[in-house]
Structure formats: C-alpha cells, structure tokens
Length: 320
Image 1 (spheres, rainbow, N blue to C red):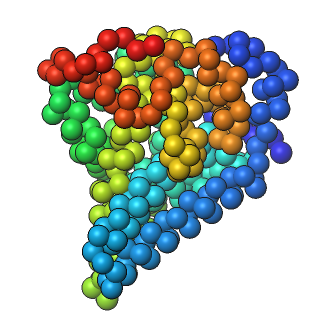
Image 2: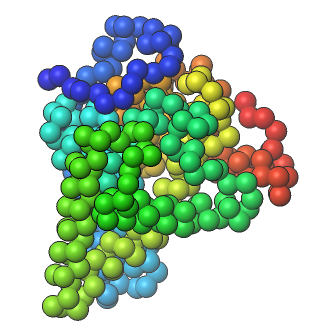
C-alpha cells in the first residue's frame, strides 16, 4: 500500500549510507507491526492505571504505578510523532487517527504538530528557521531544571493551545498555511471537547478521573520525556549536516520500545521515510558514520551539564 510521507527529503543524499535497494527494502510500512506496538503501549497504560487505582496496594507500589502510568502517557508523544510522519502504519487513515489519539493522551495536537514537525525536518537545528530552536536550550543549571521538570513544556503547550482555541492570529507561523489553520483550530477544539466531556463525567461520582488518571500522571511522567528529547539535538551542530546536527543514543530496550525507536534519531532524520520498526536495521548501516553516537542518556546529560558555563563539570570537552 502506498504511504504518503509528509516531510522533505533529508539533506544527506539517499545513496550516501543506504543504497536504493537497501532503502526500498527497509522502507516498507506494516499495519501489523504498528498495531502490535500501539496495542502494547495502550495495554501498558491500562495496566499501570489499574494498579494506580488499587487503593489497597501498599503506597510505594501505587507510587511506582503512578510513575509508570505517567511515563506511558508522556511517551504517547512517540506514536504521535511516528504516525505524524505517516510511516508507522501502511494506511494513511490509520496513521492520522492513531496520531490524533496519541496526541490526546500526551497533550499534543497531532494536526498542529505534523506541520510544525515538517518544518523541523526541513530546517533541522538551523537558527532562525527550525521552530524547535524558538525555545532556547538551557544555559544555566536553573534553566536545565526548568526544562527537565516540564515547566517550559507545560507553559508553552497551554499558550499554544490557548491561541488556537481562542482564534489568535497564527500568520507568524510559516509552517501553518492559511488553508491549514482552520483545520488545526477544529482539531484543537475537538481535542479540548474530549477533555471537557471527561471532566464533566468525573463530576457525578466526584472521582476526579481526568485529574487522577491523566493530568497528575502526565505531570509526573513528563520529566522522563523531557530527559529523552533534550538529548536529540542538544549540543549538536547548527548546520545542515545530518550526521552532526542530531544525536542517536544507545539505550535500554524498554526505552526504545516506549519511544518507538526514536532514540535512533539521527537515522530517522537522515531517512525520515523509514518506519519505526526499520530504524534498528538502518542503525547498523548508518551508526558508524555519526558524530553523536552515545551510550546512554545519563552520559549525554552529564556532558550537556558539563557544557553549562555556570558549572564547568568534568566532561565539558567536545564529544566524540
């Protein structure tokens, strides 16, 4: 089945690391692979939520379940990202539907994010062009804490969603064409209608379902996602070289599973048409050519902290 990939071609020519034959072999969508991963992710959230709701469990176990639920909800960003590329499923409608649901769970709006993310791929880590650089990287320990805590993300999301809900002028966003803006507004309003309906359904029983099973867990889980996402381009070059402006982080299998293989991020940026399940195989061919190929997120963050002028920690030298 033909898939529509909604991002520009990578800066590095396709033949630089993968031959046309290799790319064709890897670039095959699979409804089955995406359905299994999506079902597993949802099952993880449901089980964690059920455990969190068991008031008879010892408090430490309930708190572990709360963190697990929050991580599951926050990392719904990953399927929204993959389906936003329309590469996860082979069917475009399944991609769009799954992306919207994943955005609902993770407090992103998939309709907006897909256009925003197209621009990020087109101008990856280029100052003044990449919209992700509108929020500058931390330059102090306090800035780092605010970023990892999720404070910057929550305030940014509330502002962005609010502008779209209230009909504010969005013409300054080059990735939103005049034809697309009404579609984005309808999508955001539909998303908040779902939140509102869930909040109203919580009132009769006084159970606060939306707070206890979504908002609070997402607040708890968001730092985990921030910790991973800050590593994707943090400390990388500000140029068009896909081997230096993006980082691949070698991490534990559970993290790769929750993040739909997003830790293979340089491979994804070099070949954004590849479905998530093909990235490990692509990494075997591309990994040796990457400047930022790091073992573990703790090592990456130690290096990032060492670059902060206010700290001067060991490890602040250039990374191999």
